[in-house]
Image (cartoon, rainbow, N blue to C red; front, side):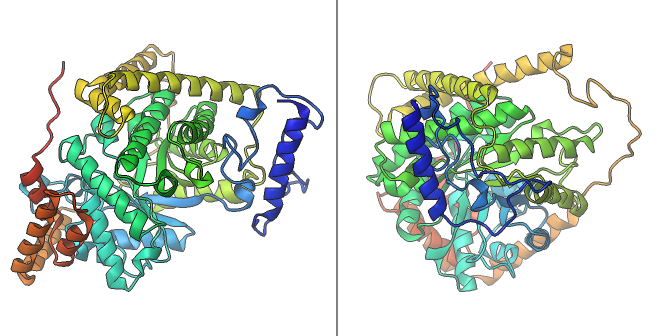
Length: 562
């Protein structure tokens, strides 16, 4: 790019920066030195390839979505929490919000994630242990008691039974008196990554895609600010993928959901802004920064050039980041505070829109109040003390970071081509990337690729080529054993008692009729969300709704592979 083109780009950025709202804050260094809101090539110089780097708030968005960077708005501190029953988790949420958290992120227990009630025999011993138990809309009301759902953004990390859980969230908001059209938040709903990595599915892929398509239509029409899909790379990375695989599989899944929306006749400029992403921030500092920058650039180019988006907001890749749970160690767990801080800083320098920081004890148990506070304060120290909010994309133009960004992008493009090849030459009713993803799931291609990457890394650890402090080097310590959070068995007993009371006190005929209407809708082209909402309003439980759909659609069982 020649000097005149660079100067024109800088002028466009300056005009947008001047017109944008900025925070009332001190944007100088600790010593009081003034700093510019963005930096670029020296005036009057050429810079080959600068069109791939660009300016913040301008295509291809390598340097961020907004011309102001974090001077306009800092990232949202969105701590992931859930344990025991709804009342206990509600207390943790109020602690997080009272301590300065800006949004909530709900962790559900395993029975809820699998669409089963707390009294289901398969739920025995699991109720409330890895998240909060949600059996019906009453639990969702208790979860957000005293928290204005119209005034706080809420993310829910659930995919298989995401749609009925979302209906419970809507009914809880209704019962607060909220205007549902104003709700803002994110539902994960990403079923592709379940087959690829996490394995929390209910049905075959096609029925799940039916529900997701219905949800996309409903939100686009009724709740325009709500994001019905958070395409998740986090669980792909936690399963053992490389950074490039995480990026490529996640964006390919995102392209699949774009194809789903288009196959429903939706306008890409309307529904694409409702897609968001969820990435892992691992401990290799510069690789993670490069991954985030490449992600924005790839998404913008594909949405414009492949899927025909013309609205700027449809080209934006907005993402939440969580620090890497898999990087936490049970040995010398206090070291996890350092790991989390480094990973969080990488996410911020990569331009994340919201962030969760893991607690030091999460490899052993759910966080205690004390460790959760340290995780929250880690973000606040980064935000308030380090100066990282002063300059947009401060590493932009670094030879190393730009080369790494290009390399990860190139690897991702090679993987996209391979996925599309998996789908073959024939047409698919949704789209070519979707066809390749479904074939890759069926053939075990994704799981095989991830397993190979995990094996290579484990070999490097065992040989000592890769180091983990406290695990295969620097193993001596004077640290004492941590006090960890333990979930009492009484939680499960009490949850089952309350569920039994709830079932005894409702109108069973109304529940049965509402579920029958929902199943009837599933047999037609009718959008299922309104019928499912009616079932939830009648106090149908999560397990009852999901069992009715299992009876209609069957269940998915992963083929045995050796």
